[in-house]
Length: 189
Image 1 (spheres, helix red, strand yellow):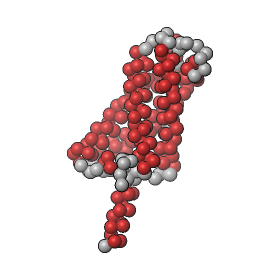
Image 2 (cartoon, one colour):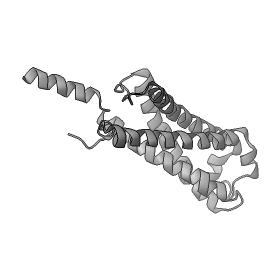
Image 3 (tube, helix red, strand yellow):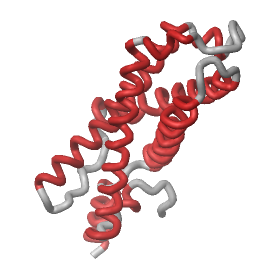
Image 4 (cartoon, helix red, strand yellow):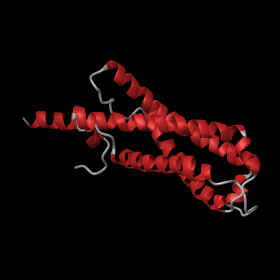
């Protein structure tokens, strides 16, 4: 009987994400949502000529670099170490394929956001302006740069993929009732 309980406990643990991964997942989720909201609403609607945009970009860029650091860990766990639990099945092959595409998309699009953001900031000289006080305004050329256009496009695609991820999680939680949030919760015994 004890062996059966230990085997079941081991199986349950293997279906859960580690505590550090869970914590980083939720931090990353919060940061990505904040960054998307800030970029698509606040930064988009604030002209480059406004001095306040420099302060907005300071926070945006700092959080983007934090996302980059966390993303390194999650990409390492997912693609190098392959230490993530098996995907939760929806019971439908097409939905399971969509879930796989969404999860890979989240990682790769987030990486694309970071890389295009870094490229844009370097090409526009933003680190010196935002962190070094080289100017009090953002150069008007910033929005014409190819990395900016990529950043804006990827942001819109990432927003759709994030919404699909949330809908998938709600499907598992409310329809399948398979305890999906326990898998990724850092607050469990």
